[in-house]
Image 1 (cartoon, rainbow, N blue to C red):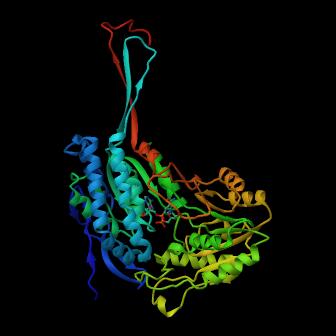
Image 2: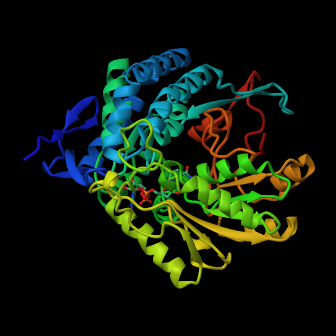
Image 3: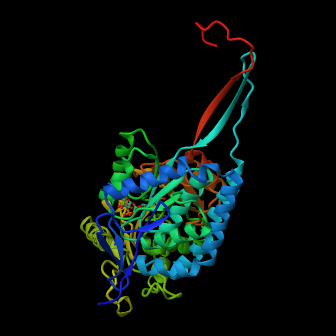
Length: 495
Ligand code: NAD
């Protein structure tokens, strides 16, 4: 039997097994074989993690640190991630099936989150209120919330963690990450860097296991002050309800069914590349996937021809090869789900013009590969146009004019992102104003930065991550009133 890497959880600064010793296997999506064992934490482990994070928040060195010292620790962590970027990128490729070409770039970029939020740590300022009361000094302080929980999806574990951990620690909170049970390894590797950076024990913890076990136990744990969740709309709704039962603060980054709209005045060569990057990059397993391609009727046919010409050359295979363009689907349930949606689309009468099933190419080995798939003749009312597939499946929908494009684009329950391809600046501005989405890209797609707010309209989420406003969701405001009067006035009336 092959050697397994056996991981431990990171709780209160210690590497530990689950209380009952149980583990589960983590699989390599390219080989379809298990390669690592991960502790299967449950309620008792959730309790240990929550208590450790709470203790670190209330006692010990962390609450004593000055804001600039927290910032310095975050910047040190950034440097360690940069140092180990390549090593961790390869672990993610093995555990997740993501392309090394994408992961190498992502791991080199993630340090910026910790530099940016490290820099914000000592810029959290309250205000002095010019109060209307005589002999009174009134000011505000922004204070951390306490132990925060970050629950991440499997598609980009360390990037999604950076969105949460950077602002949480900069603001002075402590943190527990519950990574997806499908891709826990990179977060556990990352914890080694947090330890090396010298954060006090319990400031960052990783609690591994299944969502309905340790995940739920953490969400409802009384020591947890805030839940920052990235995942599906379905689970997010459940987490929101569970957290609401205890009035916890919640931010939600959920799914999408994003429109990528190409007008007849677009630079078509660039738009074809934008359409491809919108749906086949990361094998379509991205929340912002441009899974609905809206084409103006005048360019529809020639655009589809160009799209097919480029998409059919996509190189599938081993994600650890730099020139691979489409890798495997990350998990077996997701693999089945994508294949099922392809059948649903066929059953709904959409025309499959590319792919349309499992990839059986020799270079795909035993991996969970789906052929890049394109459906034309899609009506926006079909399930394939309304529901998130989270795989390399594109729905092409024609439109006649701007109003119709806008109507189709907005006619879904999601509102995460949208793409607009046009050379007309008035049209670009009008569309970016009227599209119901948290991000609108014009003549580009999938651009994301630590300094730009990111989040969803409608059922794509609540709150924003990244950018300066993200830090406010990890803070609470306290108003302080100090009387400078020498005696207390009439105690029976409000001051
Ligand atoms: P998921 O909802 O199945 O799981 C997400 C996380 O929630 C996992 O860690 C899981 O263990 C945990 N979880 C499951 N049940 C839970 C419960 N009852 N209580 C607490 N935690 C629980 O999502 P997924 O399949 O891992 O990820 C894919 C989804 O994530 C897609 O819908 C995608 O659009 C979304 N996503 C959104 C963003 C964004 O920023 N908006 C980014 C990446 C992924």
